[in-house]
Length: 471
Image (cartoon, rainbow, N blue to C red; front, side, top):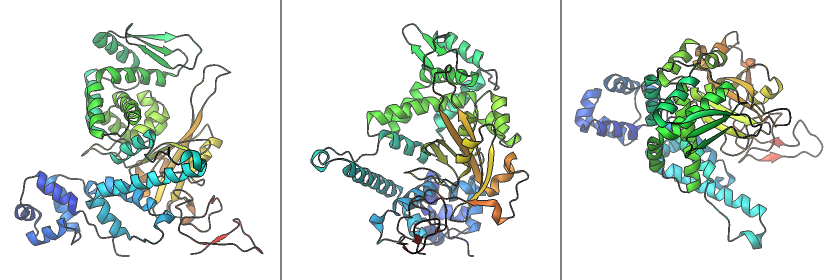
């Protein structure tokens, strides 16, 4: 099969303009003619392998940064939108969508927002009585969805906050593990804030009294949560100006979205402080992404480790591109990010064949899985159940499952790939994004038919499903 042509004219034009070079000067550095460069920048010609290599060598770029990134995630989101029956008469090809997402990303984002508004409006009109709901239906994305999309399209990495947290970690000489006392001492010296422990059996984990300059943390939370909450307080006091700058540039529509994102950015700084980027990046490589060893090394929880691995997107020092997700027992995805080709459904739950669901049945161990999506891409996925600590017998204990994985070409970087048979097709579970967009016609776990596919019902025969799907 011929390789897919690559059109990245907008990226190359932005790189040339950033270097303040004319097309003739830039073409000379790449070893091509000015007319060829002009055609590349206007997406009239695809980029050759030789040009990619020249870009990498002359400008110290990672080739993957050119061929992947936001446009891939944007492409996946637009393709899912176009699966809606609303666009049944429009069958866009991959190259056409790439031209849109790479050269007109603002238009692509607008299309996603418009579809999101349409979907919310339609759902609410179904639920509400026509006489009551027609004039009061909101079509804007929810604040939570707006914040989720913000982190998604910045690749789950905030450079200014990440670097600032790492600088503080270096100043405090944090080496992972025993960091609690050091962080408490920093709060006391720099902000005159004391950390005290509460003996109350309530569900309150932390409470900060700005007037009394006291941070009270429950005595019953695990050590990993204790350290994180102190780091979170440091984020609120030490990094607030950086956080406000990010919020201002994000341009959220509602105060609620801004508040939610502010919490997310404080959490981001706290994680980056106790898991400093370069130190954590090196340990992840050395320990081959062994979640349990990394958790022990840095005194963090498995969820904190897995989530931090999904943020290793610093230019020139990127980690292995991974996907990360967290779900509850009902299958709702509460956290999600992917730097791989695997993109999670924006609406609905996760594929029931994915091993993240199996983790609920095996709480004491990490579950491994080799999986393949309908587009033929293969993945390594590891999942485990996590339990939020309660306070005593009568307090609820929320249970979740997390999954972390990579494309199979990176599996050698994970200890979990050892002893697994990568050569057998039978070793790979056929998973999808979600039933509504999955094209598999023979899935025994299908909940609803795929959009834009016709079904056939035979009243005289039935298989696993009460219908068959036309190819």
